[in-house]
Image (tube, rainbow, N blue to C red):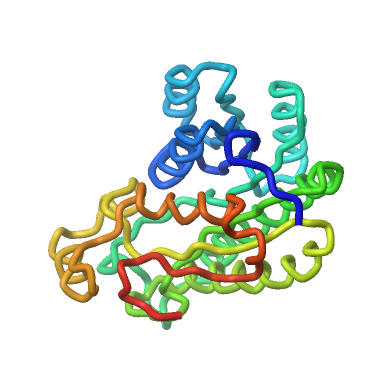
Length: 257
């Protein structure tokens, strides 16, 4: 299988301006990649990241990944800016969500609208970026797609029903896409985390919850966004050239998949 060094890859990170997305974008930039930072409403954060690394390395592009027409325009802007096709996609974008288990609707309270919102963000968003990326990846004979999941699929200890169900569907999509796209030299994998310390989404989590999770892990600490991003780099690198359709849980050993 053809491989492309990280320093030669053009990487799209959806939701790449803040939190985990920004950590992933920075990880690729530190390896010499050129990065497309997609954002929805976080223009200031995206522009700050682009200014820090300069236009030769980063372009910030606004798009709602739940809208296929906006995603197509996003890929067109990326190709126009860098003069080449996107080789690597990280489906990180998350519809508005706060990780606060005390403030979540229980099974007899939650409404379908919550599920619909999360499915549009996680599943429709990944579908749109994948479909927009595949023609260029086939042209290049190389492609890396990584989706961001959650260890709650294996260990649903918090009633994030809508979020967890959407990520479970995204895992299924990851595996079916890997089988479909493998002959084109395109790998599709998932990296699943637990609660990360700290992102915008986990900022509402009480400190006691972080401490409890840390005590439950073999490493006795909570995974950071930068540590999580390391595994995303692995799936984009030549070291993973024979790996596809996999879900790697990165949470300090808390959950065994």
